[in-house]
Amino acid sequence: MVNKILITKDALRADYLSCYGSHYWQTPNIDELANKGTKFVRHYTAAPSTAMSVTSMFSEKYPHEMDRKEYSEVDQYKDQTLFDSFKEAGMSNFVIWPIEWDKTTWLYSKVFPKHVKLISMRGIAEGIKRDTNSNINNNDKVSKEALERIILKIDSILSNNDKSFIWLHLPHVIKGRTSYGSDIDLFDNLVGKLRKRFNDDSIYISSDHGHMNYDKGIPVYGFHVYESSIKVPLIVPRIDDNLTIDFPTSHTQLKEIIFSSNVNERKYIYSDTQYYLQDNRKLAIIKGKFKYIFNKKNKTEELYDLDYDSNENVNLLMRKVYDRNRLGYY
Image 1 (cartoon, one colour):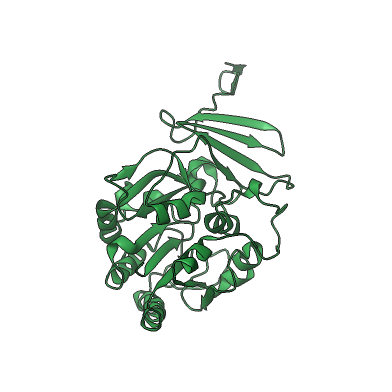
Image 2 (cartoon, helix red, strand yellow):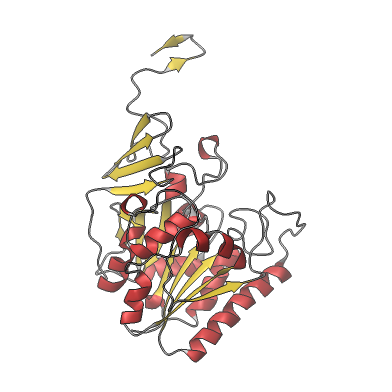
């Protein structure tokens, strides 16, 4: 098995990439990988928050299948992981991410076995305005330095290891930009640099979760299971002759996709905002073209036909709706 790399970008919406329909950003390197490989059209994270998503991605378990009861610091995960599978294949495992994630994702997931080398990198993440007083605004010099730091680290790994699996998790915003979705050109540029170091059939691209970007009036992510938060891109080396996979798939199938070069259609796909003991839990169950959402806190239900209503505007379970302009129910 040759060197492989899984590249994920935090809070990356599929529609930021031109191969998924972006009319703003052009992502030629990612598009070429999609054209040479297989693009998953309806791929879902198991949770719209990083720690829960990462846990499911590498454990193959949905949040409700685990013994974790709430979103807090957890004990080390002890069962088989995707990293263990790579180790059994004779590969060394590396994780590269911003140092800020040590205080959140690491503590709330702990899904990395001892043989995984965790590399925390300073200076590659830019805080969102809510979190920082930074005045950086499209500073190309700063961005170039951030990308160079990443490449130097990867070159060091490749020069010292014959067979490696690297999970590179990029931040919400690459340093030098200031807002969600403002750095997609940098992301594609980095993918282009990595294509010179890895075979195209060894590169996997995805996201931990999306974000709402003011769809339905909701600014960010984490507390909702609407499409904008949980449907994420997935681009992998070609599976059989499939240019696209258009049935619902899950991050919990990542090992199956990488190691068997196959993907089976599941009867149901799940995504969960919280663990099962938490009150503010919303659970999505996807079957075919339908998505059902249960809100635990107020016991409300939603049902959407995603073929005809991809923006989830019409809850099919509503018996009547109040028209405030005509002062009556329909």
